[in-house]
Length: 541
Image (cartoon, rainbow, N blue to C red):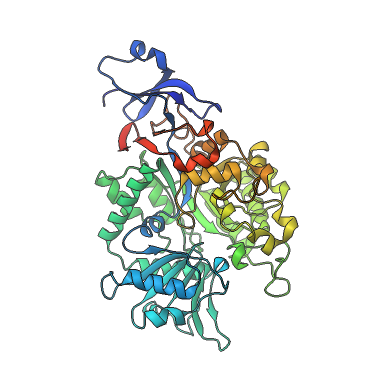
């Protein structure tokens, strides 16, 4: 490859909180040197391609540390809809209008409903979907991707009857007569959603994913962690075959880090096979994922003390599996050098997760590739932050979750517990590694929103005034670093990605304005002008 030089008066290397006038000298797919901008003509070889971006902002490519990639790709596509709606009737009709243009007999697929945000915050039932889909199977995935809502035809297509036993870690909602309502939760919901998506063809999956790669590049994303869903073997929706096919076709323009779900029987065959096969710079399998609890809004997050609005006396939610079983799974993986990332939202799940990972590090050291990570960590004890720092556990968090419903934490957890949540500032102050991501499709894949929400802790409309728990805000430089270098740490690639320095892979983006120098509200107006992956120009506005 011809030597490529990318230069600007505002280069953010990630090694200091400011920009500088620099030039990145790239050889093949890596940064060979970082030199002062005014020395380009003196120090680069004749014939080098020099791309001068003037006063525009340059930084390392963004890295989404937690995304369900195929799901995130599917819902903006023409195969499904994304819709929250105002109630179940509204959602049912919107899905019907969309499905009119879909092939006869195919599933009608939607995503995005959140009953807590509806005018009447009541769980839906199959009856409303049956009214518009009397014979065609229909499924509506919840906005938090932990629950599905099916019609009767959908239940039948999946083989679910009143006598069906839900998969481990899941449940079926039932009416007062014990009949299925069509709402399927947690592990069962994820398992059956994967079964629905298996009806799509390989070509459909590849085209959806390829289109999504282009969209990620357009938004400045050059790397992503693809996180598993269902714990049932073969149903976690980390589509390694599609990833590998796109790579073989030369259509892969985002570095993929695959984290399939760790099976409940502890079988490491799949992850070991993936790690042996995927050892190149574009595609890796740094570790596995597992669930310890659910979500607070549905009272499936596991708490140390009961919910403030308990569904029954002593309602603390529940672990997705017995803690000793989780311990055995993680320790067995750690003994083989395999990293584990655990979904932990409630304070009981976080505390137990730290206990387990502390033991894993003490006994077996750090994993070969990725890092031990706790995912989401909405409410937790202050002492657990310091424990995570000492054990090298990464806090993999999603700033957009803060503003989904800013009244929900106090409603479900009470004012005291809601006064210490998503403590971004404390993670950094105490030395805990912090990675930013989206959890898309649970929230939009919007890097500007990630940065805005972390820096302001406000909605796009500016609520609440001054920010929610403003003492946990971080600076813009810290937020960008969490979305670049922090994510690379979660993937175990901090020696290759996340900063602009010699020896690093040349993943670089150019933005039309400097996020460090504008008010956070203007972030949403920023536009990515160019995106490079391994010095290859993969997007140009």
